[in-house]
Length: 93
Image (cartoon, rainbow, N blue to C red; front, side, top):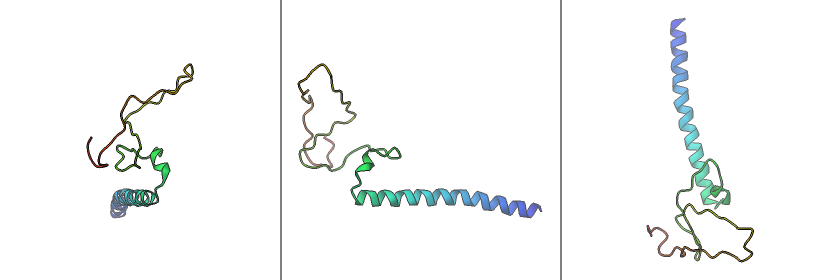
């Protein structure tokens, strides 16, 4: 009986890391497929953290950690105080 319990415990202990590896590989494959399909929901997916945009269309303005506030009392549009990002998409500028 003790041998059976030992084998059962060994099976469970081996099964848990195997499931974790399979789950990680599945998520990575799905992420690659979504990136290849240019899925726009990647930017708002709660399971993902977008830390940096590597390539954006020409003329796009990107502000890191920007907070958008639309004042209700001012009818005129507020101009952006930050200049648009220029340069190569892979530069640190």
